[in-house]
Image (tube, rainbow, N blue to C red; front, top):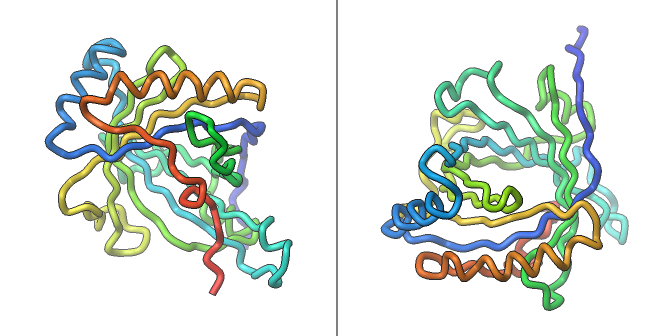
Length: 228
């Protein structure tokens, strides 16, 4: 049986510099008002609805040093918030997040990243042809602002899927309704990383009344494959 043709746009490696925080649901309206004041107005907010599927190699690499070279691939499906079930309006991106830097005194978490957009065809089938299989998934829903045209501030909640592949079955993961706040910027080279981290460290003070932004321990950002 013939397969549909796929077209991808593979990006170059860049370095994701980021800070994260956990926001109490009661403080979300105040943070949003603060972001509107910093970034423009209510029209500056961009709604976000992502279905993210993590995939791992179909064949296990034998135990040894080469296992460290195995990576989780993430299929990020950006859905239209107004028409989430319309696949023709979805944007599919394959994400490869490299090993994060160990804690080294920087003011932010740093890890290499490559993004490849899949323009047409069945993206999950494309990953299967690459030798990857389904591992886990979640839905992220919220909004984001762009600060200084450089720093992306994402405020979102995580949803678990009760039924595999069915976004309609998504249920809020945290019963208390907490929000995850991520402030990130992309450095196009290693030389740009120190300055990006310095600026992120300065930005923390803008939101300290609502959320504590921290450097996540690199161990929690590792894309380790859960081989049994």
